[in-house]
Image (cartoon, rainbow, N blue to C red):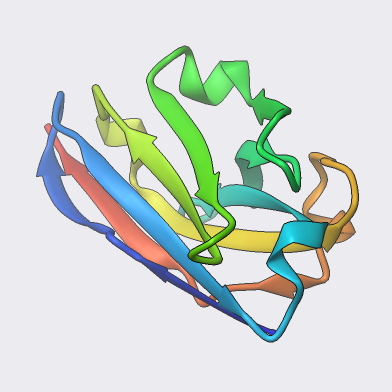
Length: 123
């Protein structure tokens, strides 16, 4: 399984970024996908997740507060995270991850991970 995250970068507070995660080596239509992030000195935390069909989504309200949108295109084996109204506290390495069947929120439940893409938000 390979998960290739991209789209990170440096943005000013209030700006937007769109992350992508291209998957290969798995039956993408069978897996739930999650976006997680890890800031320096902090534990990895979930940002959002989406079911295999895209019909169910989860957002960590304490993190997202209506600013982010997760989506997927099963024809392209890709999951996206649109991030708007970015804040300096969103600065972190963002990871995509895959697991079979249903959405969960714990990183330990996801066996397959991408390499991460760094999002840096300046004030």
